Image (cartoon, rainbow, N blue to C red):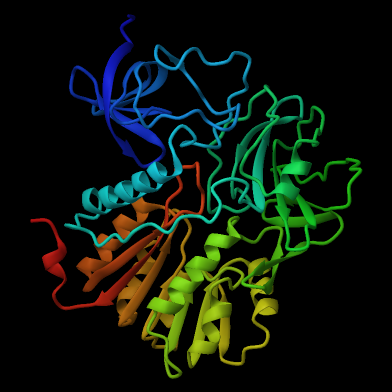
Length: 444
């Protein structure tokens, strides 16, 4: 073996889809596409004093949990026990867990969430409930993100890169991707037909599918020049650059449905791509929030009103805060029927110090980066009796939970939801209650 190649045994999953093991010098090493308990041969790709990252070269002893991935583009290394990986495959980095059964994926996500809350948040025995599975583990997405190769063909698959909520993490490749098991059937029938030809204007596109199977193609680029193209398909096409949306054909929005309720969603507005599990999240909020006719509810990062639309009729007053102008326009259309709802088009940082509103319930649905320090200080100043946190990143949730607990809240319960089967994404809803006995939750 070369000096940067090692044989190691892996111990556990960590957040991000990797398995962790130890190098001979004791450093942690993180390996994608491997499983706890497996003995593997790896090559280091990145090193620091305290840890390293490595590429999986060969499975020496496979886990009994390992299964054959459904998609031909999922990474499969050499294996003494499983045989050689088929050659000639383009490797897509859009999925992380196709090599383990769905039940094992769910268990792994529960354990990762618990580990993040314990290790980062310093919360002893965090009250993590059983994860809510996706009704469908395949073909569940009504929006997808794709990176293009140098030849203009689909080169890798991501998800939800329509907004800044989820940063692009998948590098473009030159090998074309011809198969994906995540999009809904009508979306899956269309995306592989796309071929934009070699171009220097854009390498990132998104596709959305609405309730009536209408399609929208969103072209993302830093170049303000609108690309020229001819598409032999009936769909809306929008060019998004520097936050501005330029309609090249069709409409600037789609009509999505959640629990049979229509929602206008513009090209630049965030929308969760697994509608079936979003409906379960809404049911959970309706069951767990202390909603009464005289309740005052403040919602930060309210988006298009996905949650607000189902909560508005249950409370006396609902005040929402959303920074994006286009998303606020969507919100106003989607909740036009309610007279007890107000929307502030501004950042939470700007609104909280001067807001003339005292909520007893607060709902936050921040981006993966979590709640900013100034916003969190503003929340603690308002001191609502109940705070519900919708999270799409367990590490930032754990960080923010530690701050909330230090500020006088108790983490009452946290329920994970699997919005993205086959991937490392972990969404959850955490409930915090104002308490004067919060210190007992911390690890001594």
